[in-house]
Image 1: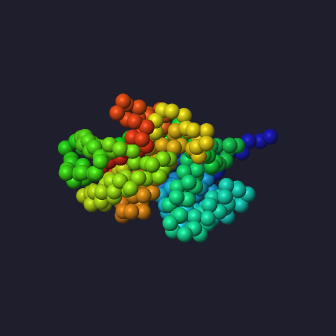
Image 2 (image 1 turned 135 degrees about the horizontal axis):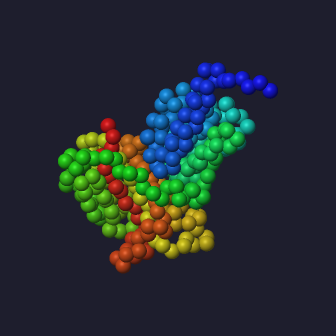
Image 3 (image 1 turned 120 degrees about the vertical axis):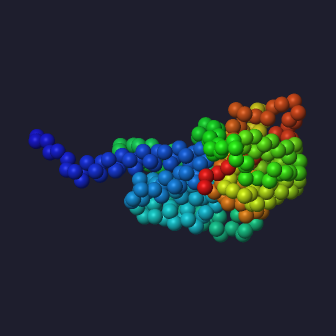
Length: 297
């Protein structure tokens, strides 16, 4: 059998396809670490001149995680049009429809429960095809337990927050590149239900973030203790519970303030990084911590 050398166009197509797959892998890793803005920028870049279903699926999940349900719905509809046999796209569209039909007072709670289950995506190459697979948080918790690197900040520049930052019931620690806000009390009654005083504290923090003088990068870290979750709990493990708490704080800030949702990253270490100090009793461990640094312009 005679060998026919590939034409220039064929070689170019092979290279372009490989670059797109590598870019999708990179965007997936960024999204799994909570670095949604960077992942979205990569997906909207020149590496994807023609959107593939897998790229659209990942973009939709990022936007759904940020509460941009209309954009997410459009992306999933286009992915379903391009790959009608993929049932996961239709399942995500059904979830979006359920959220949008609920009365407003249920939107945040329902969106939290649903979106936690879809924010993690694993991109693999199978038989030369890029496939996006839906995974539960519990199955991929190892991928969200490592905090993304803080945004690069020159020590000579002040952080874009009021130096007199004061939050009720919180301890504020200012470093050279990051401001950490931790709370002296547990924010949650149980699970992910915020206490009234927690809402007061988050309102105060939200006002500070809204009034910040420059771009921000805010990581919300959800904490638990190191004890196994109860058998009757709705959460599979502490990692899932910790991430749900980070999501609850994020959802409240989204609803109660005008903070740009793109600045947030959610993470937890679950039982790998629990609050187990002698002063952290069982109630105090029901909390989150905010780590604030200067974002990219």
